[in-house]
Image (cartoon, rainbow, N blue to C red; front, side, top):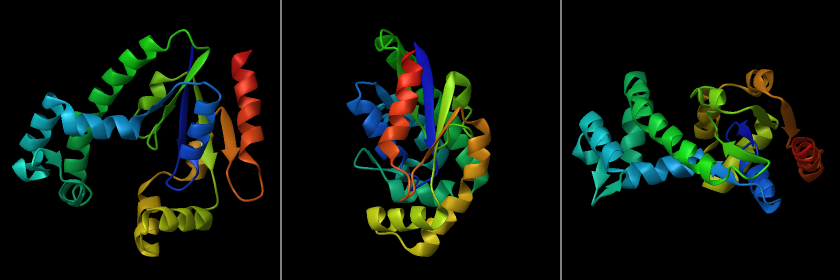
Length: 193
């Protein structure tokens, strides 16, 4: 089985690409979703987060996303410590998941921080989804009802498309000029060879 990493910046369209792979019958592991589940339900993760950020990180047993984000995104040391808690738990989950789907010709791991997290070392091939920055900003504003400056700041916090493309075996252009599905089908056909 080929392990494929799928990445792209916020608003690039990677979740749409991920869903299309899913409709093709390809199992997709969404790192962000798994991290949220672990943050809420994995007792080792929960205890470590409380140790790091205090009991206020959880309200009524549920992660207080606003509190956690407010702490970790203003302190690079806390962010790094948080990643040291969450990333190994996500990778452990990914390892068990790949065993379950080993009979498929390939699987996809979707991660916005595939490169930065080091998860790229766990995959055989990498797909990067790229789109113009202004289009990405517009998509995120529409999706999250965020302000322009807040979205721009989140984009600046991530590595840029050119850097991601340097690591990519495949690049999907998700602008309003190129159709995404034919690009995915071309990659799908190649991965099935």
